[in-house]
Structure formats: C-alpha cells, structure tokens
View 1: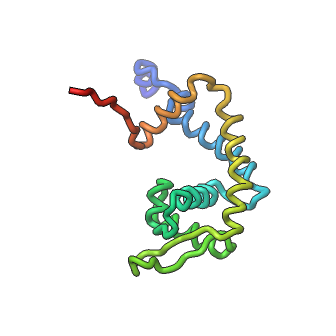
View 2 (view 1 turned 45 degrees about the vertical axis):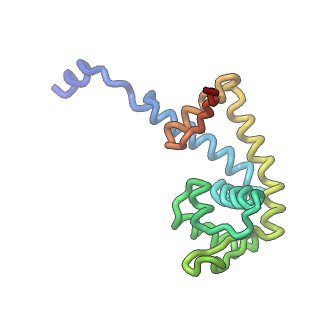
View 3 (view 1 turned 30 degrees about the horizontal axis):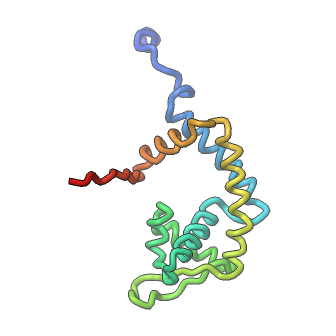
Length: 163
C-alpha cells in the first residue's frame, strides 16, 4: 500500500533535490578550501576572520570590536570568540578590553597574522576561481542568487532624477 502511494505522488529522489545539490556543492568547495589552506595550518573560518579583520582595519578602524568582526563576517558571535581565542594563542591576533566599552573586546591583527592573510588569500582566491570557472558568464547571477538566499542585502543604486 505504501508503494502505491509513493508511485502516485512520483516524488523526486532526495539526491536530485536542490537542497541536496547545494549541500554537496558546499562540501566539495569546502574540501578544496581546506586543502588549499592546509599548508598554512588554517581553517576557512580562521582565514575568514583574519581577512575580515584585515579589511576592517584597512578602512581605518584600528579598534575593532570582536562583535563587529563577527557581524562583518556573518559569523556567530560565540563561535567567533572561540576562533579568535585560538588565533590569539597562535600569535596571529591580539584581544584586549575595548577602550570605549569595557564589556567588549577589541581585536587586532599581529604582524604574523597580517603576513599570513597576505600569503593565504591568493590561495583561497585561486580555489574560488578554479571552482567556479565553469559558470562563466552566469557567475555574477549565481552569486546574486546565493546572496539573496543567504539573506544578504543587495545594494541597489537608483539614479536620481532632477526635477
């Protein structure tokens, strides 16, 4: 009886559903990232936080709150705290009480952390270029769709009209 109900509904096999395919793709991409970062003894999340901090401080903000870094990188605050503590133990980042908010931690890259970002980011960029190369002209559309699915707000520029 169960077979009859399944046959009449003609469900799509789980392995051909878009969620399954996205999960498989993400796993494959992450394996490529981990392999590229292995020589640096970094995980993708560690490099994300290091590079995110590098970007934030490059914009002139030398006193970055740890929570601001987490939001900027779209990471969980508690996970960010754990990863930052590990990076601090390795001498790649420093944490201190924030000068303007005693409840917050300020984080900064060390010289070694900055050098590691500069060495590792090209490897990660090469992984992305190679992995998504087959998308060709559809790459920007795909990136936009992923941003929409992840909840990222797209900036839309609207030309002002003179009245």
